[in-house]
Image: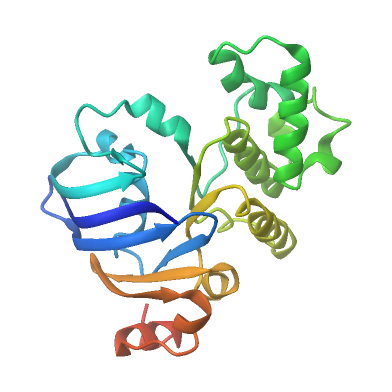
Length: 251
């Protein structure tokens, strides 16, 4: 089932930078879809379109359509706050709130009006378990989140996204600053999470893209060059530019 449909999307920033040109792309539910390519290709810009974070940037022009189900998310009438509840995002650099591990997770739920301590406790345990962090912090929930290691903070940010039960999770180089063990834990978590969520990820390397992708799309200078099933695209790319990038001939 198609979860996100992008139709002839164009994006240009006010400084004249043309970030995306005529992008047409369908992203399936319950898969890890990877957007990869060299810096400046438009991958992160597209990721930010999916939950309207580009509203906060200096955008000169954006045209085309992006649908999540029946919702045209670029429609000015779209409730952006509701959209961002449905489409959560985790960034490359973990930013934890200056409060306890537990409060980092309950804060958002309490803002939505949840007051039941039983439900809050259950949500904390479930989201930390999904993010492969529960066993490491279950006896430290009232300690400051800033005391966690970098890898643990990143998984806490993932849990903070999951606790609000989004439909789609956007990940922008979520393991770029992590050690190999933490990276492996995050990647393993994603394989479990895709059973319940649609995941769209900008990886930090071609190797990571090849490891995790069910579906992959290669971007170069604002254009979508090639897309396809992950295991096929990384082994037998059809476009020479895709092959050159995968083989490390540029980028």
